[in-house]
Structure formats: structure tokens, C-alpha cells
Length: 465
Image (cartoon, rainbow, N blue to C red; front, side, top):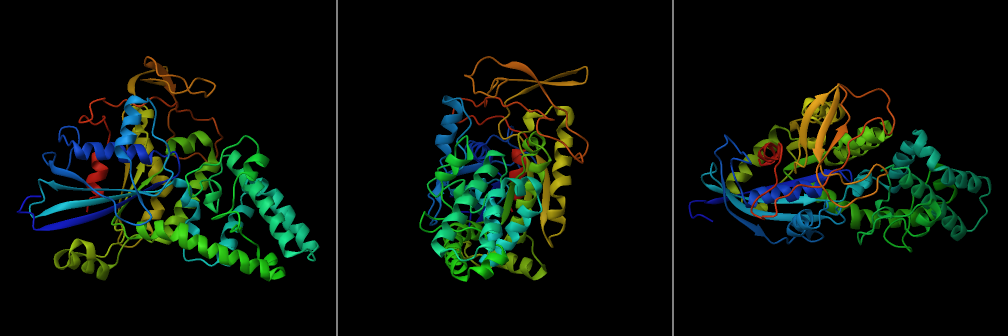
């Protein structure tokens, strides 16, 4: 670094969002633009700001693997596919100089975690009993979740009617019925799967299967087959205190090993980028809206972003007096992002941002001292907009799937229709009412040429505090 840079400004940025929201693509494109910065294609500050002396810094934090930026970019270019979903908590660290920061260089740490883990956010700082009541309250008061979990609730009723069974038998019956219920939720595309290791285990293996019974038989509830647990209603906790104590012990170990590390890392971030996949929510129906909103609300209750006056004074003083390793961190900025903007016709892109604001705006306004903004974004622009014809919106891109949903090899760009976006969220809509086809990524083969993007630069400029 330049000898004139007398201090380091560290910025920790967490990237969260439900699975398939595009977190990996977002971060891969962002790193590519930072590493090979072109101010004409990635505008920072007043548009003349440049990034210089960029270098990758090794990831050293325990429990976090290095984000495989170069592998993901290679897959986009040479394998013609979007990167595999995030399967581990990963981190990418880099250091650079900004031309408008005269006495400080920047050390930026990105934290990326699997979207499935968001379903466990409600465990943090809750006892086993409190988590059980919270989760079962959501399931019991939501008809699709309650219907999918019928095997579990039927087993509870049977056990309460006959409380003389052995503890080992009760445990086995409850585990089998809850696993079957979670498998049914997965097959019905319901994302609130907790403990989340049933869906995505510690080794990155994702639950797969076409029928609930085989899927349930292949997964475990917790850290291992010997450490399984599940939520228990108050009636069962009272009737079977020994089983409750066993589940509570396993639950606490799970929270310590799975939940606490990633939430503490996020809590210590300065900024948060929250990807909300508005297009998938519209395509999947109103239930997907409710599910995503519930998990985001649970996450914000845990992280409690924002700051009061004394916290802000302390943060500013720490920048002046402490080395960057010792400065305290908490979330003061949140960028809410609606990704996949290139799958929306330009006539509707402002609506995409408004839908985002309508959905999550209260999460921000309810927090004291939180700076927040809403963005629409395309981390990789892979379509070209065509004129509207007879009120039909057309884009041009390379189709990723055929009309039956089967993946097809990349071919020539084709013209296709996309749905228009509503002015506001409908009171009710169903899966299939909106349609946004997938396309192949368009990434320059030259590594020093980042992909075209929309608003990625504005988002980064905002969160780099």
C-alpha cells in the first residue's frame, strides 16, 4: 500500500437472502469489478473514483471457508451455468485504495452464508421452549404449513392420549413424523425448514428426492443421527420432561455450533446486503411472500441493526483511536436489493424497486439510527430489452430451460415474453400467475473484463461506510 495511507478502514459486509436469490453471482460479479475496476463501467462516488492496488487477503476466521471467486467465475464463462448455490459459510477479504480516500486504505470482508440457515435465525438467544413455541405457532397458524405437518400433529395427539410409552419409542416416533412433515414442506417449496441441517447438512449436501418418505429417511434433524431434536409443544414438554431435557441439550449444542457463529459474524458487520428475490416470490405465489417476510423479520429481530447517539459517537472515536482489528462493529447500513433486474422489461424496473420497498420497508423504518436504501440490481446483465408489442413485454437472451422446465444446452439468443409487474402487491395471487424465464449468463471470457451490471456499483458505494 501507499506510504501516505496512514490507517486502514475495515468494512465488514454481510450478504444474506433466501436460497436462489443470487448471492453467489452477486458477490462474484462484484469482486470481478473491484479487482479490475473500470470507472466507466463501475461508477463510484462522483464517477471519477478509481480503485487501485487491489489484492486478495487470506481468510483466517475460524468456521468460514474462502469464497471461491475464481472457480465461480470460471463456471459462469466456460461451463455455461450459474454457480452452484452457497453450501457453506464463506468469506472473501480484499484490500485496496480508493482515490477519494486520501489517508486510508480499505480492508473489506464479505460474509456469504447459505439461505437455508435463515430459517434457524429464531433460535438465537431463545431457549428450547421459546423456540418451540415460536416455530410451532407459525406452523399452526399457516394452513399450508399446518397441512404439510399433519403427520407430526397426529403423532402428538396420539402420544398425549397414551402417555405410557417408553421414552425411546416416543423419541423415535416424533422424529420420524417431524422428518416426514419437513420433507413434505420441502416438496411444496416451503422454505421455513428448521433445524435447517435437515435441508442443507453441515457437509453441504442438499435434501433431494421426489417423495416425502425417501427424502425423510435420508436426512437427520440436527447435528447427527444421535443428536436429533425437534420442537415440542408445551403439552408434550410437560408430559415428557425427560425427553424435553434431552432435546433441549441437543438444541443448545446445535445453536452453539451452527447458529451462533454465523449470526455473531453478521452481527459484527458494519453493513448488510439483503437480497430479496421479488421475481421468484411473484412466480411462486403469495405463500412465498409470507415465508420470506417471516424469516427476514426473525433475522432483523436477532441482528437488531441501527445505533443510538452514544453508539455512533463510540464508533467514530474508535476509527480515530483504535487499530482496525480492535474497532467494534454493528450493523449501521442495510441495502435491500431486488436482484435479477435484467429479467424484467425496462418499463417495469421502477416497479421492481417499489415492490421491494413495500415488502420490507417496515423492517428498516422500525430500527433506530439505521441508514437504509432500496435497489433493483442485475449483477450480470444477460438479456436485451425489445420493444413492447400489443402490451406484451419481450426480452432477448439464451434460454436456460425449455417449456417443460428441463435444462437445455446453450444456443442462439431468442426472443421471449416476460410478465409485467404490478404497481403494488396483489392481495392474492397463485403460482404461475407471473413468469420470468431463466437465461444463460453472459460473461466475458477475458478475466480482466467484468460482466455488464446494473446498480451493483451504487449498492457497493452505499454499503462501503
